[in-house]
Image (cartoon, rainbow, N blue to C red; front, side):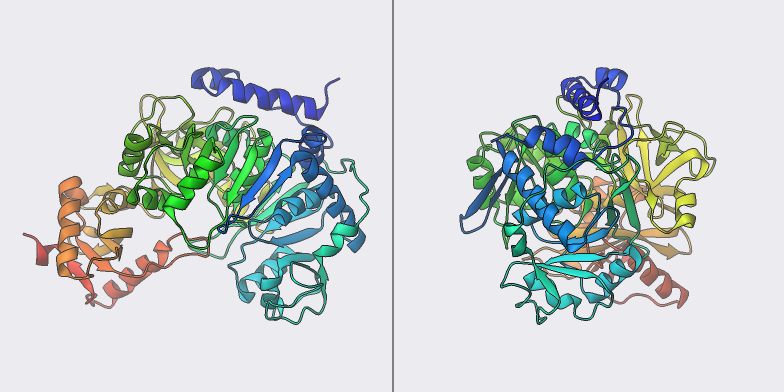
Length: 572
């Protein structure tokens, strides 16, 4: 009789073997049948990590200092930490806010909390007291673990929760708080390990709770089971193209799902080394030097980083690089083209959410189509649904078919039955994103369902316009929203963050509108430009709803916005 671990490994190996042949992978890949008790940190990680002297984690700092931890050390250290946490009262089902940076303790604690059957609530250190209060109250956290520099943020956060501080002297200090009531993580070093631990969680027990950064509402609480991420991230591993023995680097900050995707689950599912380069200020040359020095094989970065890299001298391809990925938002084709010209490698796009693992991707070794984010990942039941008729279509909302329960889908939104009913309506999980599919099955992102608008009876995708706008050297970022118009119903307006060295004036606005006119279809003409500080969520997503409200308010009041530039005034 095979074990869950054996089934997990067989399916993992199958995905790695097949992903180079997309059609075969879709036809033959099967998810492992994980049943009964399962704990990823014990049944997968510990199983391959114990006695394994290869590097699990390699962290390098700006000043050149670094720390390296083997798989065996990580397994044993997390056992010790889990023992210590259990001694403090942390147990199965307890919710733990983990608010740390890219430091060894983060990975130790992730594994340790999971081994206890407790629930990890990753949290960014960028949050202030109001957001932390919300997370503790709605999330029901009983324990908070934070760096000494962040302890002061909790002085005004009410609640009867356990407080653990990492760094500094024994208990608090430099964070603005007096350290009273904080237990020093340093005490874990003296704990006598009770490991190896035994699995005490069922497959449907919760493992993770993420707070998503909503652009239109309060953050949602996304709950994942012991398998939805731990098994579901087979798709992310396959998309990255990371293999056993590789070195993988993703530019990402802890607290967000992408960090767990690419700096925890995917590389360790593949038994690869996680490489981290910590820096206070981005330096393209320094990053490329680290890529070369560490012999990084697979590298994933957000579009912002890729744009900054191409503005520098890319130079020769770092020797070990085999796969390049973009994540966070769709990449502009010009960025992909310029990296390809310099390094001979193509940045591959993909699509997923906090609620899922990777759903759609351009997989290794497969033909790419400009502008497309790829094809449905093996094992993921992606469909496009017409939002008006509810019928399957070649353009519509990107959904997952629930008739075959998707392995890589969240349990649901915690404490929000109405939202769960809405997002799972009609037999589909609704992503809220609109896409189109061509005759070869390639899917192209159109925009959020609430972002796409009509102008003169033409459908306008803000993303399509923004992709062209950011090609202009004057534009760092752009957000396109509809401005109400009596004749056309709405006209596209671009809110622009202007690049250094360019004036936020009529001449620059004219140059941007001319560029858009020359590179877009006539009906997609950008008719308004305003230089503006773009409102964003804590995770950096543009809050278009605020810009749309600004336009609606001005229109309702019958007032023109004096700081905007109009196409008809500058161009004829």
